[in-house]
Length: 343
Ligand SMILES: Cc1cc2nc3c(=O)[nH]c(=O)nc-3n(C[C@H](O)[C@H](O)[C@H](O)COP(=O)(O)OP(=O)(O)OC[C@H]3O[C@@H](n4cnc5c(N)ncnc54)[C@H](O)[C@@H]3O)c2cc1C
Image (cartoon, rainbow, N blue to C red; front, side):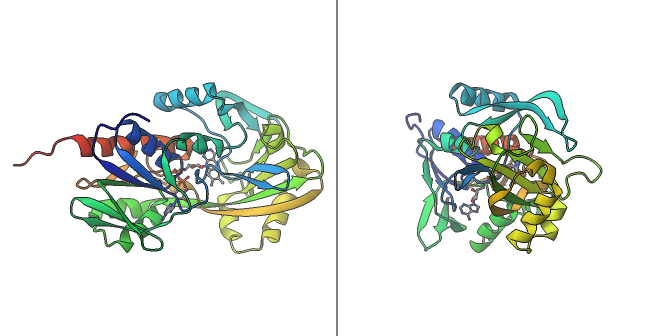
């Protein structure tokens, strides 16, 4: 990170793509930034997990690139060996490779490698849940679970909007009605993710994933299925990830893991093909936004700055989260460094 030139500080809540890229950008601008993350590791929905010898991407599976700024970042990650192109399309439910020429990227070793890479050199406190934020004169105070209080000149909130609203509500922050209404409108779809270690090869065709989602009700009950061995991240075991569609996931949210897994396995049995040795399930209450905010971040308070960001701002998905984090950092940088005029 660069030498500090500005005597300003920022606290970022959430160490997913949005929070980490915001923090990295602010540090590069000379603004001392601390990231608080309630999870044990960084990454949020860029998540890689293990079951026995199996390695699974259980949240985001791949990402695409449209924006030039994001493309420049991804080029760096490719040069550094963190990400690589996976394919230019995936198999359809009939098994036929549906190539459209548009690159899909994955992270070498699993998607969690990207946030881990961005977090290097940043001050990130994992296992630290922010219970509330509150205004204190020209500063913000962040109240951490357990009661510790830290203060900074600015705050960026990156959890899903309903969780962010709970945190600001706990600190009695009075948001402008328009900002509150914009945040309350944001909605996410749930997703149940099932991970299976197989005795032998799966029947997943090249390039190692089947995309069921699409028009006309496609994507229910199975939304997506990937063979993590063919993807190159599970070298020692046949490990597949199945994602339930949003309707299936909502309807089966309270069912047991065995019930959920058996429906999804049955629905995709010709791709699973081998005996299931072990299984685990993960429930994502906020998987992907279905109602987003139209701008890349939301400045709820200018002085002291309080900015909301994440994948529900502007663009959804990994790229949208990244662009939102970058946009939030730029807003904060400007608000903290532009002299305010007195009239
Ligand atoms: C099952 C699934 C499949 C997906 N597939 C794809 C895909 O293939 N391609 C794609 O582009 N996108 C995909 N996505 C979406 C993509 O993962 C997200 O858009 C992106 O990772 C969101 O990043 P973010 O930083 O906005 O939020 P997050 O990654 O959710 O980060 C927010 C962080 O805030 C933390 N947090 C929350 N509350 C607190 C608190 N009070 N205190 C401290 N920390 C807190 C959370 O633990 C989390 O780490 C998928 C998501 C899921 C769940």
